[in-house]
Image 1 (cartoon, rainbow, N blue to C red):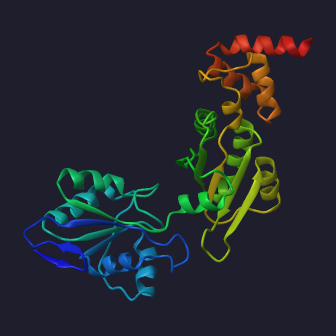
Image 2 (cartoon, rainbow, N blue to C red):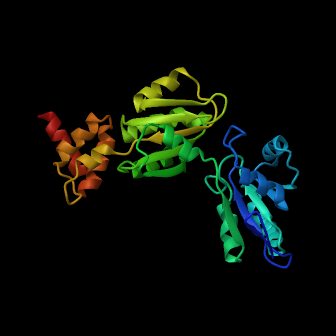
Image 3 (tube, rainbow, N blue to C red):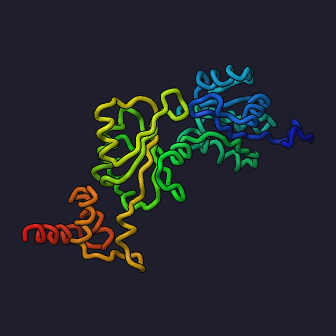
Length: 295
């Protein structure tokens, strides 16, 4: 064995190493010196899209061999890569942008590699999730990342409903052709809370739209969505404020529904959430709300 700049280089008869290399999410300058060195020194780079990665390598005059590793070939190609690692080859795994394995291919290769006692080494760097979060203007102390929301409206509603009471800041990815529908669903399910929508992060046309959900919806009603989007949604402050010291609702169900409605949540969704929080049948809460409104 020998050491090279602080990292162990294995002898040919030993298992190789799998490097998870973060790549720029937009600006090509956003890559670490370590990542560039690893990309030069490994035997092979497994890329989500070889055409995309070749542009990065060309920019930095890197000539390491490339092979594709993406959603549609990951099973067969994963077996091939594991065989190479078993022979002592060193492989860098990259996605089109950011850290491989985060809403991109990667984790399904890491798990079997670890099971085969292959050393997996992270080479950290840019992350669209963290970048969007820290410039959102929303709380960063605790957050959850949910990746892409489902494409069908019913599944998207179900997912948003499951997150309705989440008190931490929530980060999503979204495609431009679904942005308006997703914003409308967020408004209906989550209410008119604060949010930020970031697009084309670190690129020439980087833009961050901050405000209430209504303000963001109005903005994109006038401007057609283009590029790649990160959505950052404020946590549910209403739930936090309306729980007592035992973490149970401190208000009567009807009053609780009224608070949710005042925050811009539809009556139907407010009743659903209150019924769950109070552990009551939805029909019972609905009847109580209708009786109050008819008085």
